[in-house]
Length: 413
Image (cartoon, rainbow, N blue to C red; front, side, top):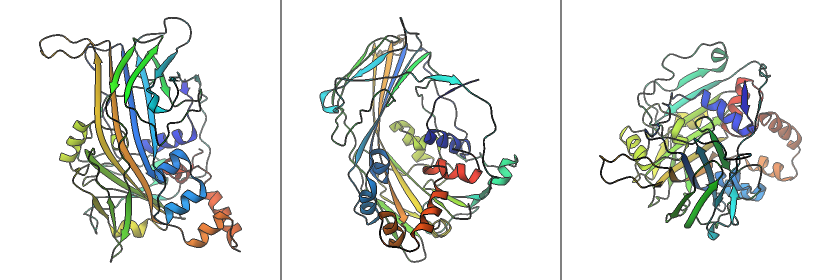
């Protein structure tokens, strides 16, 4: 058996996806089968999302906790997939960028290295804790909530009835992956330390060239989306109102919150009016897909700029409840040769390319007390050593949802 080298956060994310409440359908394919497919996913991150993507340290964390936010960052994910093997030698490809991108003349699209996999049991303690699942905007929760998943029972194969019945089908769009390409390359990667900056621009000419695909070239007229900023305000009764600035480019919004208790219990809430979590809603999505999900009441319409998290969620989530918000944006598509206007004419493109946009932000619904924050910063606090030791225990499986879920399930990271 073989596996692709992945980072700890990636393994944590895969673990989380394995417990998602949605059985997403497989990727669709074009009947004509282009030789090469290329995707650019461009994001604008703010709040804690920008801290995770671009660093920030304690100063940024303090500013964010006090409502000051931090400077937005950009993210860029490039993927090239081809039905061809390299013309000669090892796979090699580059994306030649416009000067405004600030990434130099080009960035390399690196083919991941594949190594043998050793089938060994995953180490860890016995699974413990529960996941409490809520959904829908409103001060109070709807009927049938929360759905409770006991990790110890799941580890024994006892899956709650109806766990994967979401009541709505989330469309899965085509994606470029190692698994659906004869030869594949992507960026960012370990070959270069270049990073896209907050001032980077995508406007201008783009060209992708390599030894396993035809040359791809197009002019991009849509830049990164502006930042979205979210805030949380608790109201009488314990519910929390999430609000954000509307973006003209947004096609729809999706919010979720996640929290963890010391006893191992975790809380997961989504703004969807139906029981639909994970899958494509955490990805970049086309306007057409977003429209379908607005109709299914999974995604909020672009006219909506607030959503109330039920009191039961904020009460069950404990002191550290993380909020996240996605604003899905426009999409640009290119192909060569272009699709014929006459549908009766067969279309066999050499390559197709897609550029998707989104903005996202993260913030704390219930931040830590000032004593904890000052102890982290090195202030005088006689309880600091004990608190720091407890934090180390909580962080033993890394950060993020995947890490918290992995810790609860008792698996190594």
